Length: 91
Image (cartoon, rainbow, N blue to C red; front, side, top):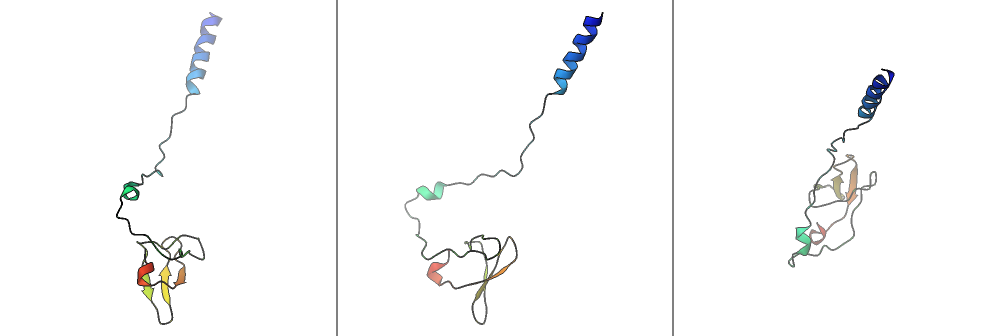
């Protein structure tokens, strides 16, 4: 009888060690289809980085015209950055 009880405990312990895979919600897909198109405009100028978090000014970023310079408020850290971009240099 002891053998039967021990076998049952071993089976339960083996079942207890099974782990479930967790879902990672921080995964997203980026389409690179635009890179293979031949009619892509080439960007000119150097990238403008945020002085706090080092993110880059992009086509979704908004700039404000100030008295002395253009101001970009970083979307990630809300830091105000002075930028100097011409119309041709805008992403």
